[in-house]
Length: 336
Image 1 (cartoon, one colour):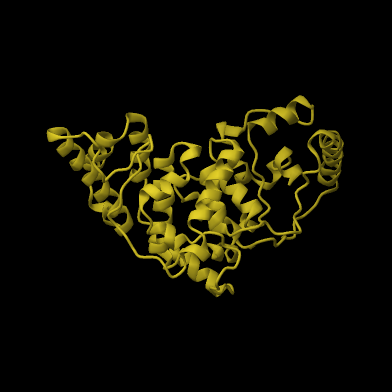
Image 2: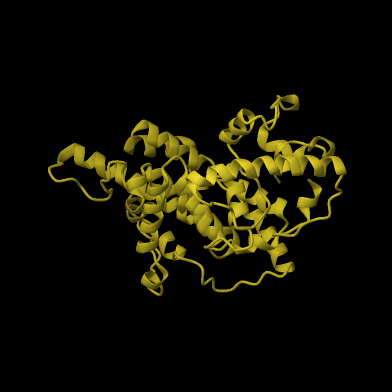
C-alpha cells in the first residue's frame, strides 16, 4: 500500500474505517481469542508483546534467520551461540587482523589448506591445486574480485572440491552476488530522517572479527546445524556486502527509513524470502508485518473462519498487499 512508502517503524497511518469492516474485524477477533484461550492451556501464554522491543540488532536478526532456515530450533540456537562465543565483542575487540587467503571447511568437517597424512605424489598435488582454488575463491569474495571470475571457473573450483549437491548450492549463492552499491542511497535517507551512527550496546557478535576469521572457523561453529559450508559462505558474503556498500557492518539505520523501502532492501539479501523478511520486520524493526505459512491457511479454513478461494490471476499469497483497498477485506487484513 502507498502508506507503507512513507510510514516508518511503528507509525500508524490514518485509515478510513467502515462499520462493515469494523464489525467483521470484531467477529474474527472473537473467534481468534476463543481459539487462543484453548490453545494457551496446552502451549502456555505466547502472546506477542508489541510494547517491548525484541532483543538484539537488525544484523543479528538477519544472520539468525539464515541459521534457522530448514533446521530445528535447538540446532539453529546452538549454532548462533557458538558464533557468539567464538566471536564475542569482549574476546575479539582490538585483536582483529584482516585475512584473505583462508582455508575452507569441507562438509565432512576436514579443513582445506593442509595435506592429509599418507597423501603422496599426484594425488597430493591435485589436492593442493584444489585447496589453492578454494582459497582464491574465498579471498576474491572478501575483496570483491569475484566479479572478474567467469562461471565456468567458479563451477570447476567448487565441483572439484565438494560433492555435487553442496557445490551446486554454493555456486547458486555465488552466482547471486550482484552490485548492490545503489542501496547506499537508503542509508543517506536514514541520516536525513534522524539516524545517527552510535556504538550498539545490544550487539552480541564482533562482526568485523567474523568477517576476517578463517573460513574453517566460521563453518566449524555452525557445523552441528548442517550445511555449514554454504551457510558460512552466505554469512560471509552478506557481511562483505554490508561493509562494502555502507562502510560499516551495521543495519540499525533500517529503523529510520519507510517500511516499504526497508522491506525491499531486506528482500535484496540473498537467502531471505518474503516470510523471512516479514519475521525480521515484525520482531526486529517493529513493523506491522504479518508473516504466515501454509499451516495458518489450513487452520483458519478447518476452523471455518474463512472460505479460501483462488487469488485473482493466480497471484502469490505474499503479494496480497498489492491488491486495491476494496479487495483487502480478507483474512490477512482482518488479522492485521
